[in-house]
Image (cartoon, rainbow, N blue to C red; front, top):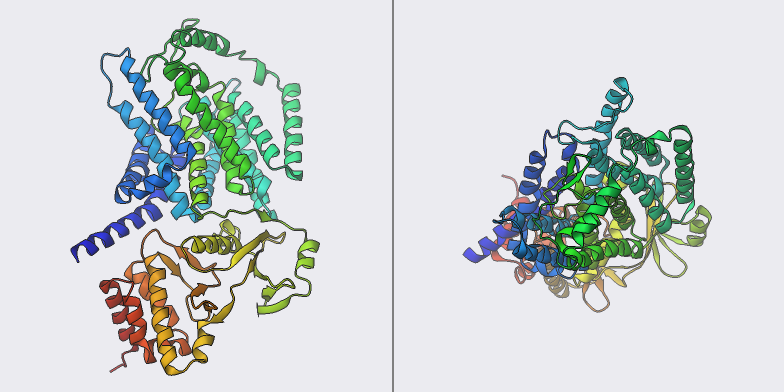
Length: 617
């Protein structure tokens, strides 16, 4: 009993951390630089709400580490960190700061946390990113207005309230969210979304220009070409044409923005760094080695190139896993281009690569602006890849058929289900089913995560868990904002139909098996909000299967008692179901449930049902 309580408590802690704390931590990591007064606050947010919770999650479930180690990006990062720490053996410093061991750990927690979050709570990824982008948009708009009012020649906008204290570093974060709005403009299907995202893109682009930094312009160009290469459509062509025209206009009317600051000592810095690299080309100077470069009486501590920084500190041996991470991230983004989130994250990585050509140099740091160029995009790509491998992310392309093509698909279909607005489920001529989901407001959960994609993802995830579900054939995003999914239906009767056709003795045995099936669902963390006897099928082989899967969540752990009781309470809303399950055959139902679930969970179910069915006095 004591062991069961510990396990139950550990599951509740795990669920709370991964479902609620990690999303908050990621949101603050992405957005807090815009409103905190210094980077130390960002560090506290990240350590307390993302890094430490992730470490605790891995301690609670060590098997999650095995899933992480199946991801090539994670393995390459660990190899890179292992070699970086090895270089401390020939460190020129007399003592080694313990903080040097914490930095790789905190960065690894970013990879691990993204892997857990995108597997167990991937529905929050788009709202988190959107919220952070809106915060960035509001702050940048306010700063642009203030900057325009007090503008003088040679002024450069910084932004933020204190944490963003350098124009170039600020431009990294501005450009990061500029890529996000560009991605929305390229992928948005609904005109209202485009009307909002296009002005947002313009504001973020103006913010980048106002910093007076040329590095993000190179990076934005590289990212735009990457998006056009991966997403070859009319909007991509228009984007490249607009980019070319904008660059031509900039060079024609304001060439000094590009030429007035010359090379900013970049060529001299790179030349001096290469001479230092040549001293220890293979093993590097050590992770904690100091780099001091003096140019025209200015002392600088970075080579202004991530690649040169890696070569200087950890040599060619450390450069190999580092360049592999960049290459693999881009390859994964191109390979999985059917999944829009891979397009976003790989575009952010392309932006970071472009910015890193002429900026940066530190290889492993505490959270700061440079994380937006390298570690955050790489961690998100790794998290998406892990989620896709674990079947919690849609693994097929979402098609956008022309209205005529979609109309031809449903021609001659038989209407299975409809409401006052029209058909909801159609049986097509080839025997497959087409389920339609009407457009939701773009800022609702259905706007961020269409129900058709939820249906398809839940079906794939259920099959991986060993639960029979419809086989997904196609997923559609329609021009009017609605969506649809085509699937091969399961063959069998609903449990409601089966119970109607059975005598009392056989019906009791079926109810007992149904109780066992419900317990299996609950123990595997499957919370089917629409659970009733019309959504559970008795298949031809005697097993059970689920249909109508859009309204379902799969939790990381076995369901807590409150969710189990809520599930059964929903079933009691249907008079016929309540009569069979809770009035006539309740004991067989509980007996079947108890054969899988714990005595505590079964007792809570019994108590809840008896309380609801007890006559009033």
